[in-house]
Length: 230
Image (tube, rainbow, N blue to C red):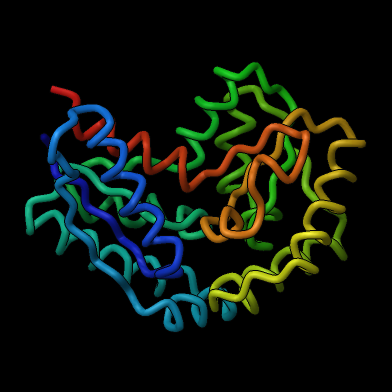
């Protein structure tokens, strides 16, 4: 079994979900008392969020690259960054290490194609929804990406940082997200990507008729299965 290196803590609530899903997947695949071999480097999210807000992606990339180097030295065979937004700095991180990074947008694109989704709604932080580093991975796979209107982007982003990252799960916020998802469905979305690792704490498949693609689950399951490949 290969060792999975996780760069987590962004936020720690969703990192818990990654850890749980990876172990559950390995147990399902191998049975018995098997569990995943995992190395976790959990960063201080306040420091990363400050870099995001100030647009200092180079500094945040340096912080995560240092974490990646530590995981590689500790014996990780490949890395998973347990957040969607910080995949913006994957190229910067990859230059500093010799082991691969499993890109969340790439594995999500694979899942969408397997489900014959050609037009998808994307929810996430404002950085993920509006910048190209994430959407281009989907578009390169032939998938059209729809994002909310400008005012809705602010709502989605605010709920992530002011509530979900602090462990606050509010029914009113769920209702607002579902309204936004319904609007994207009316614009032609065949499915919705929960493109922030915290959104899965709020929205589940049973909440909407639109197929839900939770990137936390997709990413964590993929990593667990990769760890079992010879």
